[in-house]
Image (cartoon, protein in one colour):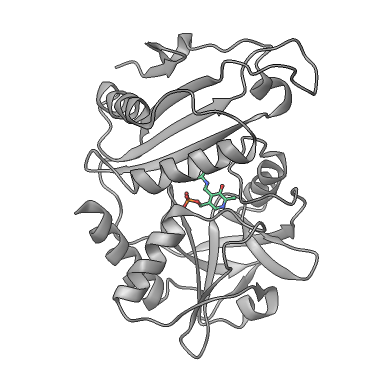
Length: 281
Ligand code: PDD
């Protein structure tokens, strides 16, 4: 079965999907994206993803390429055409095509690409704890905008891959952990407090992060939004990651040193289960 992609008004076989070499997304990384988790054929947190997309666009003075209702129809159709039951929808909007020039002198027609892929028959309710490494956070200051300009994130993830790790946690100039290269980072302190960074310009305000925070509240767990350091992570009783593609994933070690006993912790396990239950309803 061949995959189908949506590109600027057409549904085409994935391998034939193409964008101009003068697209500003290709030339300058001038665009934004979203990744939405699909469970049992249903889009998870679709509205908050579209809210974040609209916000990212507006921060870059980019218009929505079409109404939100029209975009939702395309997303649903791409999920259907690709027979995705458990997977991800990817959508990307770039400023459009123009002769290469850093500035743009007139509004362009934004380019829209939507794809979907299956990631497995079922979503695992339990996963093993993963190793992470740390790297310096070398990104620009507006990490709250979900731009396609991901070079520091890619270099960080590649470093993790080469070290046999799952993710790279990025460390800011002040020594605090900002987030993972494609995920938000959390710890559970020895006192039982769940800690994650507040949603400022320093991190991407993950949609999974927000839903997991709501789940923690429903479970009456103590949640504190504040930055935390590498030392706090190494002394934590648990640590975990959240994202649309990893849901809630426990961290077993950081830079080769175990976090607690190195196994998935009870809070991360409980949050993962409760999150999957909540979003599959
Ligand atoms: N990444 N932080 C960064 C830097 C991210 O790239 C992501 C998501 C997150 C988590 O956000 P959310 O919970 O909305 O997925 C945090 C996506 C999955 C990606 O780039 O593929």
